[in-house]
Length: 65
Image (cartoon, rainbow, N blue to C red):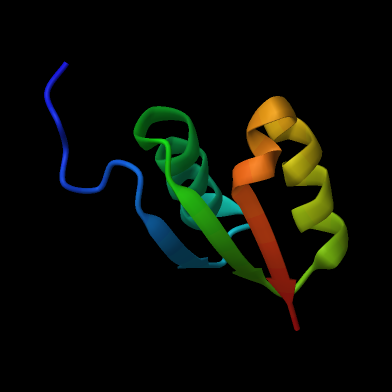
């Protein structure tokens, strides 16, 4: 396995509860072992996404506005 520059970083993603932001968040957490600070408008959608992540959710930190 080759080392990628993004592996094990902390990343901020806007729009983390849906669409492209959700996909990027999931990839960063699951494939690159990143911690993700997810910024989103909908707390409900973001919390549901965190549940979908299962054990990976410990690497997902949520900030809604």
